[in-house]
Structures are given as C-alpha cells and as structure tokens.
Length: 73
Image: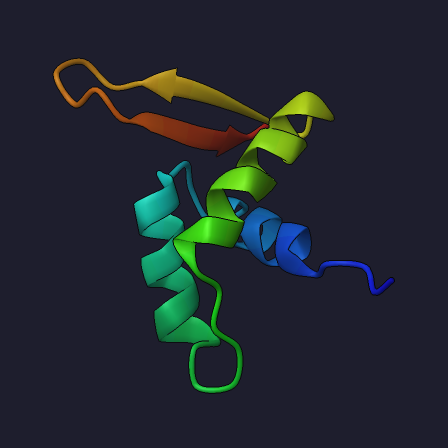
C-alpha cells in the first residue's frame, strides 16, 4: 500500500496561513494543480487525521459556520 502524500500537501498549504479546506483546495489547485490534483474527498479526511495527530487545530469563524484548520507546527 502506498503512503498518501496528501498530508504533506495540506501541511504545506497550512504553513502559509490558517485556511479552510476550501481555501486549501484553491491554493493546491493554483500552485501544483497542473501536475497534481487533490479533491475535497481527500482534503477533509486528511485534515481530520492531522487534527487527531495533533498537527493542526480547527476553529469556527464567527458567522461562517465552517471550521478553519490552522497549523500548530
């Protein structure tokens, strides 16, 4: 079984600034999207795994209702 590289891409995006899963998708699409495409179906589970490992935290922006992941390392 191959190791997923998604977590490295997500952490790389989060190293720029705190952002939501939607924003991560946009950053990845504009930066590495010409040779690697990551979908929401992979980004959100990856964020959950990273949070469980203590590598990111989430917060809800007032009024937004959508969690925003932030890198803690």
